[in-house]
Amino acid sequence: MERINETLKRVITPEFTTRLDDMKAEVLEDPGIKKFLEENAATITPKVVDRSLSKLYEYKTSSHNCESCPSLEQCINNLKGFEPKLVLDRNFIDSAFVRCKRGVIEDERKKVTSMIDSIHMSKEVMEATLATVDLKDDSRVVAVSAANAFLNEWKRTNTLPKKGLYIYGPFGVGKSYLLGALANELAALHVHSVVVYVPEFLREMKQAIQDQSLAEKIEFVKRAPVLMLDDLGAEVMSSWTRDEILGTILHYRMSEQLPTFISSNFNYEDLQDNLSFTQRGEKEVVKAGRIMERIRTLTIPIALHGKNWRENK
Image (cartoon, rainbow, N blue to C red; front, side):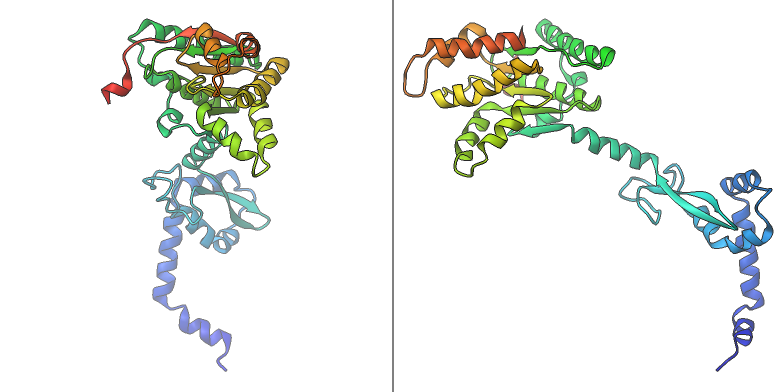
């Protein structure tokens, strides 16, 4: 067997030594490394530098402040979304990986996204922002101002207002879009909201009886810190969905003073008339009035008008 000294003599050639010296000189010229060595000059000896050369080279060839990475997905560092930070560990210079700025932005995006639970809502609505709402119509200005007032109250007091908005108007004027925009603004403030497309949700509740998930789903919706019910009154309800589902949710939120937002094609009076009639054609004025009492307590009515955006797509 060849002795270790003989092996080293054969491997460490003059050419190898020259390349190593060149690499060391290059590494020590790196601004970040120079700064670190200067800050720790009392502790770091030439031997510590030589012993840590591989870590210093890793730092030198990594991307910092995302300057060498076109995107988070194309990050060139060993740990995508992280960049090395030099640390002194006894008599050795090591790397501690910290989240890069693109990684921090992505983490924040995921956190914001997790603040919204969307139930049967369209992708377009759930990507809306208040900044993209067309303000050429006066009623939209009023609606956006009311939404901003809600947001500002939270920013000022760190307490959610007790009343949400009841946004009503014709088809396609942007009622759902406004709800989605508000949900996204709240998410950016780390306020969790649940946005529900009412017709599909009520159909789902009927199916939930069979898989025994009804109570769980009602609990989830009714306890949302902020609840948004989109397109209420779009379909005639049964007595059961009106009283046992919608009524239960609204009663809880009224009792707990939880902010609730509703969009509808009907104003308060017309919605009450709509809710009076069941799928069987029965007229139940008192029960509809009970639902409307809760809606009036929970919301401030805002009329929304203007052109039908769906017809202009």
